[in-house]
Each structure stands twice: as structure tokens, then as C-alpha cells.
Image 1: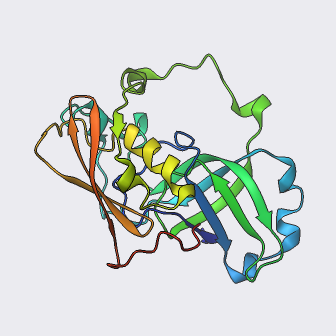
Image 2: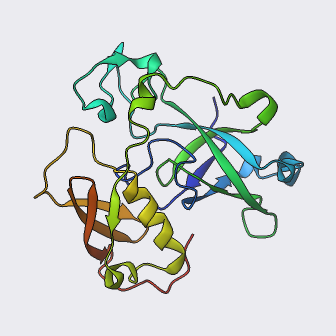
Amino acid sequence: MEIIGHIYTDFPTKFGLPRQSGLVEELVGRIELEPEYRRVEAVRGMEEFSHLWLLWEFSESKRDHWAATVKPPRLGGKKRMGVFATRSPFRPNPIGLSCVRLLRIDLESDGAPIIYVAGIDMMDGTPLYDIKPYLPYADAHPQASSGFAGEVSAHALQVEFPDELLEQLPEDKRRAALAFLAQDPRPAYHNHPEQIYKIAFDRWDIHFTAHDDRAIVTAVIPLDGKDRKHEESL
């Protein structure tokens, strides 16, 4: 299969990413196609759809072998489940699948068409295999069973983000930061109140601790050592 493009997001590493697409609508990604696929006619009609399926590569999870079972972090990292019963990145083929909301298609800038989407769950620079429209009449199954994943889907943290720290982020990034912290990025087997966790988000490191069901932000540090909060963002 050919890589048709890459998606650019605010996460240089996987820690802090939502575990599924669509959970944090405030997280925006930018899809840039490879030169041979930069054809305006290739996206003709896409603007009529509200959501898209993205097929992409777990580029940081490649292995020379595969295992029939994996340990989902949200189940405590100790209970094994069949790899085909999970969305683990460690698979025979490192293919990810995400449903995202289409925001807009830029047909004017260099590198057009550039596609902006919301609700991402992939790292910055993730290789993209394909884009398909989401079809509610065929793809939506409201009565579907969530299996063992439904047992942990409702877990969330109350986020305490002091104003003086939150204001170090651009205004358009603040709601996203609050939302992905509420998703509790820690593996379920991490419950150490004294530990400081660090999430690389856009151009900042966000430090937080977790006590019971609270995430407490302790620092926001520019990754390049400079205050860049007023610069243009994704």
C-alpha cells in the first residue's frame, strides 16, 4: 500500500492522546497529501460529508513479530485479551482506523488540497493510507455492544488547571488541553499521587499529578524554552 499523505497534530508523542477518535472534538489535525495525490479533483464532493474515516499507520508501533493477546492499559495492564478484540497498536499489520469530523478543505494554500479535521487520536506526522466518507446509514449502529471496553469508557478525571498556567496556552488550545486531561491519559495501573506526568502538547510540556479522580496541573513549560503563546497555532 502507498502512503497518500500525513496528518499533523499537536502530539509529538503518544502519551496524552485520546484512546479513540472523536472523544476530544477540540483536537484538530491537518492532512497534507503527498505531491502525486495533491489533486483538487481527488477531494471533489468531500465537502458534502460531515465526517471521514481515516486509515493510517501506527508508525511508532512496528514490530518484527505479533502476539495473539495484548494487555489493554485501561484494563489495568494485567488482563490479556485477543488482539483482534482490541484496538491495540501492536497488530499483525500496524493499521489504525479513526472517524473524524471534517472542518474544512483548503484549496488555495501551497500544498492544497489541505484537509482540516477534528477529533483526532494520532501523533504528529502520522502516515495516512486512505480517506473515506463516513456514511451514517451504513456505519452507525446505536444499539451495538461495547464489550469489555464499555466497562471503562465512562472513566474521567476532574481537571484542576490554575488560571495562571492555563493562560500560558493560546486560547484556542485551552479547551483541548482540559478535555484530553479529563480523559485520564495514565494507564489504569498507574495510580501514584506523588508522580508527575508530562504530556508534550503542541509547543508545551504540561505537567500534572493525579489524586483519586482529579488531575492537577502543576506546570506549563514551552518546549523550546521560549514563551510562544501568541503565535499562530494549528
